[in-house]
Image (cartoon, rainbow over all chains, first blue to last red):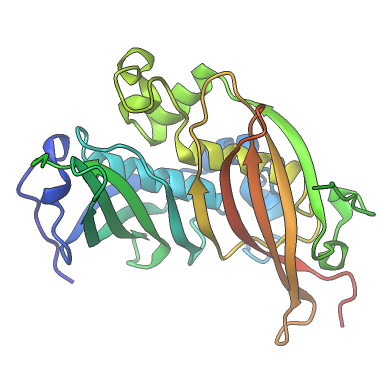
Length: 159
Length: 159
């Protein structure tokens, strides 16, 4: 798959700048053991996320990141590199979130985002919906997480 | 809707203890402004999540929590009160995650979880899948987030 380039930088994009079918690759973000444990102690205290030694005896054979931690790291890359800093109006939700493979200490994650579709709102023509397919990829080129994101964005042409 | 009781405490539940159709309500967890900002600065730095003053000028009229923060707070309640501490084997993903309403500083969240279905694995009869419908509810009884969770759990009867 070939990565496409946006014509407009992330802080100045509107709905029209997301071209259906285009594929965007960016990152990276490192995953450290202390961050896995800190996140999990706060939000997802299961032993395979919080206790390196005990995690060795689980089906994962060692510590893995909470899926919500992976999702949150994904969001950071998504906001820094893809989602408009000026036109983003939030999101009504996501579909088909899949944790495909464990994320482990020392992994480095990047994103591949495909623009699936853009739809202008009929009732509010100054905005519309951006549908993106997001893949989180590790340093071995394995997809560790994927999901379909829905984002509301302002349009450059407001009518 | 009436809340059901588990017969077995959370640290000792197996797949058989989740009765399809039963509804479980528990919580609560407070949402503070400083936590909203801290989470968002790290994972979702959009102004309606990080900057109280600037957020007043957005469609939300004030600071709101990142949806991933809400999901992470949900997970903490889910792990503390619902998901087995002994039989949980992780999750392949979630479906139909919806951020129904904004979560704001000062809100207090609780969970309502409905057991949708349990399915024993044919290939690995010591385990199976638990499907749950999760609703995150605020202090005004509004559903702020919902999703369908899939969890893998060990069975008490291993054959």
